[in-house]
Image (cartoon, rainbow, N blue to C red; front, side, top):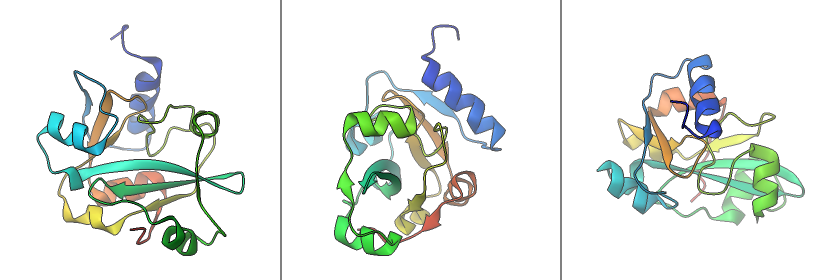
Length: 157
């Protein structure tokens, strides 16, 4: 696997370290949206866990939401206890996750990022999330994702 992107290799190592049991899948084309990822994987768009990094006054906040939802930033800010959540710039995302928008994984960041998880993801036996690169995803379950991220369940839509 020497041709594998270093971000995917790093993610694979961290997945194993955290006890993850899921499969890492490299998609034939970059899947920057939940709909594209779902189509490539043959699953419902709601089973895609979008990793959305927000800027909360200079501090990162990661929200893992069902691909069937849009985050309501006012509701989410209140739930996570911050004044407001702003869309993070590409530089902010890379600085806090080491990854690019469209490929942000739920973990394997340079430092821990406070994480909130949409309870709607519980509706799916298998969840798919980014694996550190826009063309890579991994399978997991809601409970495993919660354990691996140390996240907090919160309504965000």
